[in-house]
Image (cartoon, rainbow, N blue to C red; front, top):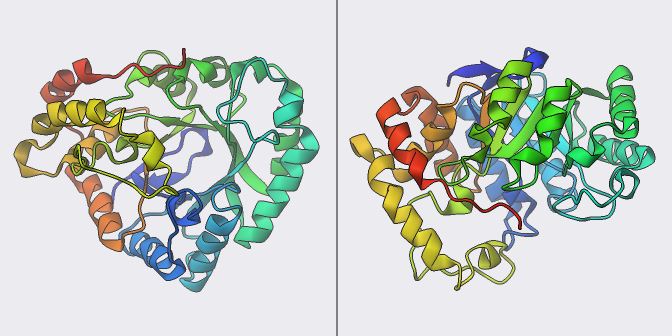
Length: 322
C-alpha cells in the first residue's frame, strides 16, 4: 500500500481508504454486523489506515462498528478516522438559499461531534460538515465552532463534504484556507472537479478525499439492463429502470479503456481517481472482505497511462443540478 499526504495536516494516508456508509445498513438493504466487521478487518490486514464514516450512516451504527473493530484489533493510533456532522435540517444537498443556522448552528455542530465521539469511543482525527454551499463560506459560526473543537483536542482537523456533481459549490471555500480537507465525488463519469476545484486544492495544500470512485457500482463492471435492487437499497432509486440504460451504455463504452492490460473494470476506475496529483486518498465502500482486499491492491498498480486518461476525458457525464 502506497501513502500520500493529506494536505496541510501532514498525515500520510493509505491511497485507498475505507468508506463506511454501506455498513451503516439503513440505505443498503441491511448489513449483518459480523459481515461489516470482517470488511473492516480486511481493510486493516490490507494496509488501509483511513476510515471514513458519519453520524448519519445508520444513525450512528456505522460509527459504533468502526470504533468497536478498531479497538478490538488494537488499531487505535495506527489509523486515522474521519466522521461527519449531518445538517440539522436533514437536507441533502445543501441549498445556497438556506441560512447556515438552519443546517449548522454552532450548538448542533458541537452536540453532533460529541455524539460521534461517544459512538466511536476513539479519537476523531477529522470532522467534516456533511453538506456544503459556498453561500456559507464567509460565515464565521461554523468555522469558529470547528476551530474550538480542534483547540480543545476533541478533533484534530476539519473539512467539508461537497454535494454530488456540484464541484463549484466549494471552490470559494477551498481557496479560502479555512479548511484542512474537502471530500468530493470524482470518477470517470464525474470529472468536473478537474476544471477548477482539484487545481485549487493542490495550490492551497488542501487534502482531497475522493468518494464514489465506482459511481455507486456503475463502474464496477457488473451492471446490466437486468440489474435490480431491493426497495430498501438506495441503488433502487439511483439505478431506477428509467435511468439504468444510460448507466449501462456509458459503462460499456468505457469498459475497454478501463480493462486494458487485463485488469478489472473496477481496478481501472480506481486507478483513474489515483492518477490525479491532488488526490490524497480514495475511499471505497464495501461489505465484502474479498472486495476490500481487491480494492486495496490497486495502490500497487500506480496511475493509468496518460493516453488512457486522455481517452477517458470525453466520457465525462454532466449531471450538474439544474
